[in-house]
Amino acid sequence: MKKFLTFLVLLMIVGVTGFFVMKRLNKPAEEIQTKELPTVTLTRLSTGDISRETALMGTIQPSDTYYVMPKISGEILEVFVENGDRVEAGSPIVRLDNQKAVDAARYTLEQTQVQANTAASSLARITALFQAGDVSAQDFEGVQAQAEAAAAQVRSAQLNYDTQVEFSTVTAPAGGIIQNANLTVNAMAAPGNQLCIITGTGAKQVLFNVTEDILRNLQPGQEVTVEKNGSEYKGSISEIGQVVNQQTGLFPIKATLENAEALPDGASCKLRIISSHAENVQLIPLDCIYYSGGMPYVYVYSNGKANRAFLTLGIQNETEAQVIEGINMSQDIVNSWTNEIYDGASVKVA
Image (tube, rainbow, N blue to C red; front, side, top):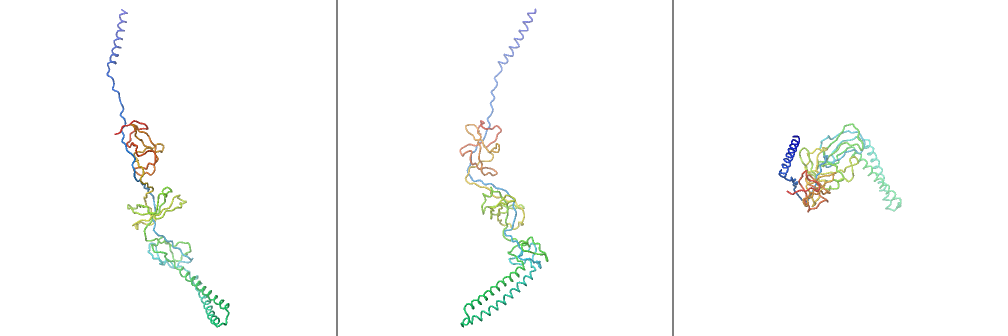
């Protein structure tokens, strides 16, 4: 009985084992799973021109600025202008108290005129005697020299008197608009102290500063676009400074604007310039470029694979970049992105 039960248990174990073995053997083969290759699109380098535009800040200035300063010291007796007045060249600005210097110059002039008249009379008398042979040539020449010296002193005294009279009234050196005037009767004026500024009525200018890199690509006559209060004004570069500003480390540039008379002097504005330009160069869309450690690269397609190629780039704008080296015109460049692409990845072309 005990043997029979043992045999029965063994038989059941063999049967169950056989069942699972047969089930495993009869199971249909699983399909081999294959991964789809990433699909990419391709492009190539193009040839063309490229420019990069740079935005800067500038300051509106008048085309001409004249600083009015007296040439003598004196009290201001009269003021003839106010800020905003339009003046012509030679218009009076202020009159200074220079009467003592004028009186002294007049006295000197009168004194020299008397001396010159005396010398002229002596010359007239000795000339008659010299012609009659009663005076030596040496004496005649001595009196003649004295008369000429006296006449020269009169001319010098007259010039000094005219100058003192002229300096008593400070006049406008050129036509324009009076600005920054701080003129008060009875105030003192002195040489070197500015009385006011006269700004020209011609075209406006914009003053801005650039780095050395931008400076190298600028030239006189180059176009500038100024933006102010929603309006644009065209202009062209008129002056390129070659000496760096020690405070800013930048180079000053001036541009003359067209039809910008409405812009206020001293106002800040935005401006745009073409800071770099190249013609007939190799170009690539920016969408194709990746970066690794700050180094630009692209994926180049060849024989079903995408391989990384590092680039040296030149000028870049909003949509494309100049390719200096790294790839050539005959190579296919991957211009579609997928997270499955890497250096040496197998890909298929759409």
